[in-house]
Length: 363
Image (cartoon, rainbow, N blue to C red; front, side):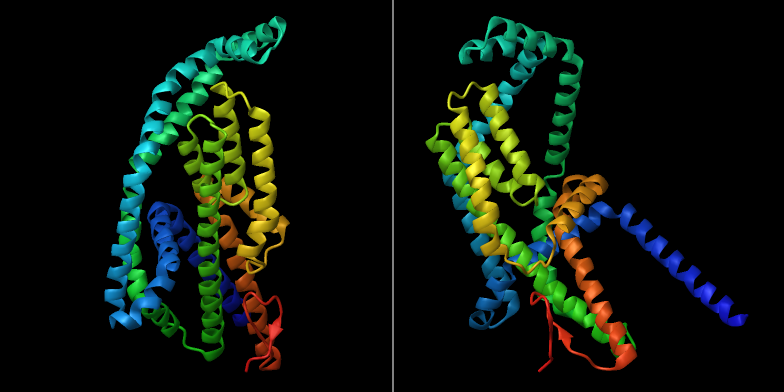
């Protein structure tokens, strides 16, 4: 009887601890997201810091040098490219109220229909449909504007993230060592150390691969859209590159926005644009991404899609972005826990190395 009561008490304590942790994560979710993106930023520039650390005789000096280089690169980008993007963004923002007005009243149907050779009956039907849903169009436009305003209000987080990343770059190993020192038993410490090691490798690979894919997409989008003379090519190209950071959903949103804006602003070569977007998606997903991302994430496509949908439902855009690394983290913890359980039963066994997809003997 005491044994059963002891087990019940341990289960209850575990449930309470997890409930408290989940409540804390929910209440402090905005702050935790900022710290999480600071960790991602640290993973992004850590190879550069490590590369120059020896030459500058100190990690602090290396971090300062890399940050100075990043500031110079960002400044050059905004000096040469920023004015064009800012000018197009201003024109687009100024034209949006009039565009929403024409859509909500149905006038856009007559304008686009006459330009594209639609029949008068089709134009009237579309105009009537838009006019009858005027309140819905206005509500969606107001909601989108509120979301954009919310993002602009929180733009200062972008300045906070690199500052927080400095501490992770400088003392990241100290943090992990202190965390491991809290674990008293050797098997549990080996389990935690293995999880941290795999997480370190997975996150580093994921963040750098996402940056390369996003930068490549930005260059392709901006170049091709400008070549095709798509309206607001610089803004749409930059937006397409930024949305590449969001797995699965981001590229779809980028394609939808590019086609929608081009259609509403009467771009004449819409089929050519659609063909380009479809061809680029195939090239990116089946040629570029597999070579850059590789199989290191070890996620089945079905698991990735489930993670994206669940993340979007739970935490919106941020949840979608974090879904892939979270699913990969759960897989790492499961693999390491299985090794830990086998060791407890049968003693030392072959070790699992992240990214290999198999168990490898420890040398």
